[in-house]
Amino acid sequence: MSICQYRSEMINNNNEDDECREIKLVKHLGHSLPEVGSLSDLIRELNKLFESDNVNVDLVHYVMKTYKSNPVEWKKFAKFDRFRYTRNLVDNGNGKYNLMLLCWGEGQGSGIHDHANSHCFMKMLQGSLEEIRFAWPEKEESELGEIGRTRLNLNEVCYINDSLGLHRVENVSSYDTAISLHLYCPPYDRCTVFNQKNGKKTSSTVTFYSMFGKKNKEIEAPIPEDN
Image (cartoon, rainbow, N blue to C red):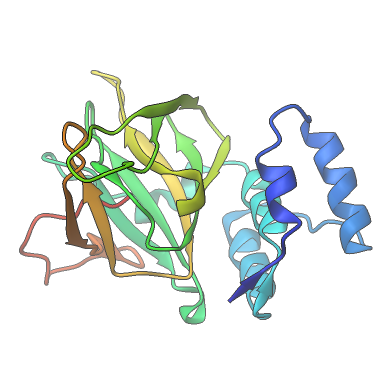
């Protein structure tokens, strides 16, 4: 899957407001931006975008951000586990992407991980999450250096790929759960998890706690450190 080079200028420019970004995106595309009024609209627009092998990541980011969380639409996909966060598949994008709900109990978080050369979009549907980014280890057995920390609130979207570093995501609340909507393109079934103290890395298989609203009965091992 090839990606427009145009995308990195907009997503990673925090000095621009949403209106400026949208104007630039319209000029780049040469047509108006899609309207997303529901989760069904979001899935439909994503499927349209991924019909092509040349996907504009800025437009994916816009579509994800435009959707406004409505619990009535996504509650059937939201399944929690008392011991750790869960990954719940919503749409498989005809094999080109995975769209999923991640459900975070109080105090639950991921390990520090990469994204297997994939693009990751994360949108808050309920509560808030803290994203901590780390630089790739400069040498073996070296401590990972933190390079950024961001609080993601309702309906906000963040983006990461491996060129931007590693990250960990946490629900730091001791009394509120959190739910986030994630898109990974292309999909992957393994990622690398890192030890913050010494940079040691471990390959981890990623699995789904549920698929299309039904719990995955085949899960026996712990859900991996992906998010």
